[in-house]
Image (cartoon, rainbow, N blue to C red; front, side, top):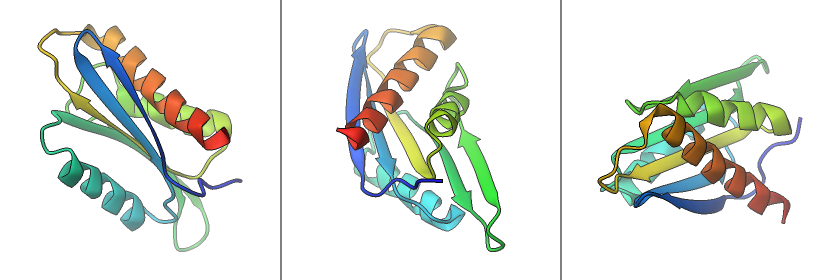
Length: 125
């Protein structure tokens, strides 16, 4: 299974909310947590940092995790689905800067998916 080799990013704006995605290498859960912590540090004004990862544990088994960080629309699961679809190992994080207009669960899910897809497409470019 291919792993994400180098970081790539993408940004989507929807009704003044900005969704900043990062696809990054991570071989373990600790590395994935470090990437998410780095995004929290880099984007302190972001309301939510949704993420998903596919990494290996100490025994070489595939471990998948997804977190919504309190956001509606299950964006963590949508990001995990993108990693599964492309068969990638690594971490995918989307930080949301709230623009003052509620998008609802469907809108947030679509915007997170679009940002994640853009970051993964940048890997292939």
